[in-house]
Length: 404
Image (tube, rainbow, N blue to C red; front, side, top):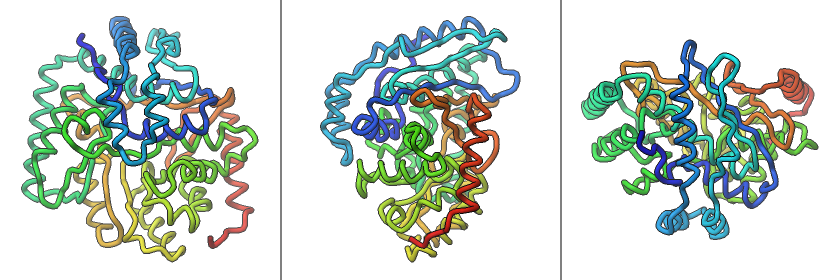
């Protein structure tokens, strides 16, 4: 197969925003990341596993070009010190453990500094996904179906069947292929549809290529590692430590807070007046989006903040129909935006893979996510999950709720 990841810019923007903060504040942190395919009955053949190894070796041979570094340097919140670090940075194949598990299937983990392992997640998933779909099916038929479905989506947008406001493409990690993601981003960028404004993509390489806005702020790993990686911290206060560190790095720039790492209700205990003022908005990634949005509106009202000045970014398993419903519900109450992934980058006649690569240890200790729905956690130690849940429960039941 041809090389899948062809540039180190071919990563989600939030890897760079988190990467800069990691470089400046947590460069000594060590993490372990673990791959999981959540689809029942999906198997990776020995040939697929060997191709995945080959593609990751090719990825590890990449370096940033000066043109790419200049592009990053021109992003307002990226600092010269981080760009200089990236000039020296390179992926390390030694950080990867790619093997066959006891069931004869793919086992994939990465180990090393958080600076390194964080950057591997998205390219690795993109490689695994593309290898699978190219080797398990007739790729040409899948790509033809993908293009047909993309054309139907765009025609319905033009016809006004959907109304999305502002939306971005977030599908790099589970895209059908690099070719498919490039195709849909270009088609949406060229469409110029009134009422549904395509503003950018999380893929920094494609944002640069097509003159779009690269989109992304933080992921669950930030709250998990900052909040739980320091073993002196009470993990029920993970959001406070993570938000405080983010403000320390960025001030009022680059601020969309992710709410559901240890439940949104616990997040709101720390998202008080200062943070709610400094952060430009919040991101939804699990649970009922309407219920979540209403909860956020009430919280902003409680704090005396006009929610119409804040962005509510929805990014959980969206399609145009779901996004339209959400947009029409909230468009007069806040700034609504969407990050839409697999529906744009891997919609074919075959079911998409639900693959993830999650941080499972930080500084030698388990870390976990307890989101607003069950099934998204991926901790190897159930005792730690139970401890984290007890910590959250104790805080929610015993802490005096403050106004600011």
